[in-house]
Length: 170
Image (cartoon, rainbow, N blue to C red; front, side):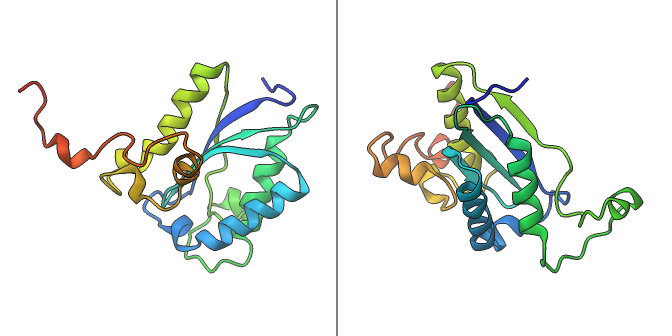
């Protein structure tokens, strides 16, 4: 179900889950994302780019629910011209897909403020969850830094995973 002017959470994943393509080419991803955002406006509520996937929350303008076109433009724009060693399936070759991205993506319509807060927290904590950093503040490819700058979250939000040290229940 799509809602005109809704707020949506997305997870978009590379075909090769061991790839670091997104952070290796972060400037390219940012440039393409921004060019699509200018052409087809949306607000980025929260975002985190990891080596092999992106989590993002977009707020679309009133009378607009076409996030699929936006993702198509971002994915194709990012892939076009990249030199990537990927083996394409016959199906992807027939459809002229580069094989960089998984075809589908996860989409969730944000229902209310509590749902939004949960998803923003999930996005910001994801680099820690995946073991890329022990503190959220240490991951550079995240809107977390904007939230800190704007006084919404403290820079030590969620603490340091290393402080836990397996001391559960002791």
